[in-house]
Each structure stands twice: as structure tokens, then as C-alpha cells.
Length: 415
Image (cartoon, rainbow, N blue to C red; front, side):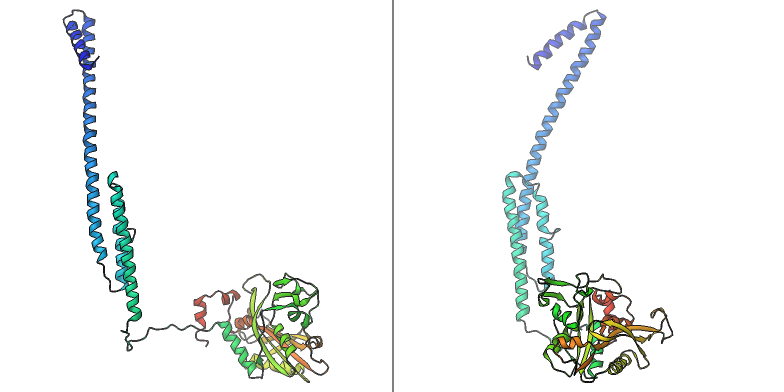
């Protein structure tokens, strides 16, 4: 039954009720009229909504079509711009890159509008946008190549122009102090001898009279690289723990008399702190000849101390022990800060330890092929960091290896 048939039946029913004298019938009439009114209102609203959707769809389709046309026109305009780009310097090329290829550039803006293009036009517009992007990249790269080629072949160098200022650096404080030490001992007849930082147990320990159970031969104290045969010291490879191995190598190949100085970097398995490091620098000296005495050693070290720390410096020698010297001693200098009166730096003793020394043990000379009944000698060794701390009052050992340019610039006036 159609809506028109229903409306006709309802109208006839309402007319009959209208002329009825029954009160309930009249009430029913009023409710029926109200229901009919609501039904017709609902139908009108549905018709209105359907019409609006059709109208909106038509407008949206028309709008998307217009966006596609506008994008294509803009792309053609940008293609002409990009193809004709020229640049005189690198700054202009960078501006072109920012304008077209950056996140806020023209091509990214086109991609944002691309989402609103009608589905049937997306392929065409997408191809054009990609073409524009590739053209922009190619043109900018071409401009860069042209600029580099022009700079490489250009002959417009102005030889009268003031040169660019070159900021000069300075030598490292450890280098400064090492050179000072070398200079002092060179004037006393010592020559430099160099050796490997990676060496074998034979030259680092065995030839220097270290006992087989000496703590220095333990992994807790020394960086061993290879320990393939405990019975063959030449097969045990390690990072040297002192530059005394240079002396062993030298004595193997040279006949006395000789005075040598051995500077270099050494390694020990220690916790890094303000007072210790796993690597540091040493300078060791060795003199072997006939009739060399402890008096000779004392005079050489006194001369060195006064040259390094000042003419009023005093020294004292305290008995000590080293496997490769006998007798052995530790050398202290009078504190150059308080003048020997006592201060916090010298722990109120007036003395500061700087090196170890002694007469070369006859066993070391014999192990190196030197007749200990004919020749004697003395040896000494000092840490460069220790001397540098005393000379420049550097409180933290780690600062020497941190490459802090602000710290290093403080030594510009040193040399």
C-alpha cells in the first residue's frame, strides 16, 4: 500500500470522527491529526537531507577537480622557474634548495594540497610533482658542479689580499717538560735511545733482574697481550711498564762506555684517578763505564734538579729497593713552593719525591753481555707527569690526556 493510499484512508477516518458526538472519538481524532502532522514533518526532513547530500557531493567533486587543475598550472610555472635557475655563489644555491626542496618549500606545499585532488586525477598530478622534484634536484646539483669547476679553474686570486689569520697552537705541557729534561741531560753527554712500547718479558723483566714471582709480572699490574709459553719469556708479550726495556735492548747491541736517555710512554694496570693513570710517560737514564761511582750519580742528579727547579734546590737520597739497581735510592728535592719550610703540597715535610735511582745491579750487566767485573754504572728514572705537576702545579693527572684546549692554552707562554 502506497503512502498516498494511507493518507486517503486516514482522511476519511478523520472526517467521520469529526462529525461524531462521542467525546472519546474526538480525543482520538486530535491525536491522529497530531501523528499525521509528525509523519509528514519527518518525510519533509528526509527529502531535504537527501537533496543536500546530492548538492554537497556535486560541489565537492567540482572543488576537487578545480584543485587538480590549479596544481597542474602551479607545477608548470615552477618547472619553468627551476629550469631557468642561475647562481653566482654557494649562498644563492642554498637559498634555491631551501625554497624548493626543504620541509617548508614549494614541493612539500604541493604534496600537502595533493591530498585534496580528485581520485581520477591523482596519478597525473603525482607524476608532475615527482617530475618537478627531480628537475629541481638535478638543476641544483648542476649549479653546484658549475660553481666548483669555476672555483677550481679560476685565476682571479688576489695575491695582494691580506692572508687569513692562522691560529697557532702550543706544545703539550708533557712535551715541554720532556724536552727540558732531554736538554739538561744532553748537555751532560747523554744521547737518546728509543725502543718498542710492545715488548717481551725477556727485555722488560728477565734481563732487568726481576724475580719470576715478582708482582710486576702479574696480570693485575701489567697489560699482557700474549702468554703462550710460561717457560719461554720471549713468547710472553706485554705493554712495557717502564722504559728500562730500552736500556736492555741498547746494552745488548752496544759496548761500554755509553750514556743514554730513554724517554717514552709506559703502561700499568692501575685505576685512573687524579694521582694515577693506566698510561704515563717516563724518562730513564743509564751510564755504564769503568769506575762509575754513586758520587757521580749524586752530582748528575743535583745538577739536573737545580737546572729544572732553580739554583737553590737541594736534594736528599733515601735508601730504597729496585730489582735492577743495588744500592738503590729515592731522590727528594726541597719543596720549591715553601722553600723547604713545610706546606700542604709537601705534606709539611719540606721535601718532594721526584725519582728513583741506584747503581746498576751486576746481574743486569751480565744478562746484557757486559762484564760486571770491569764495568759499573748508574741508572735513574722519573715520571714526566710528576715533574710537570711540580713545575706547573697541575692538581689532576687526568688533565694531561683529556685534550681540553682551555687547559692547554695556559701553557702558551711556557714556550
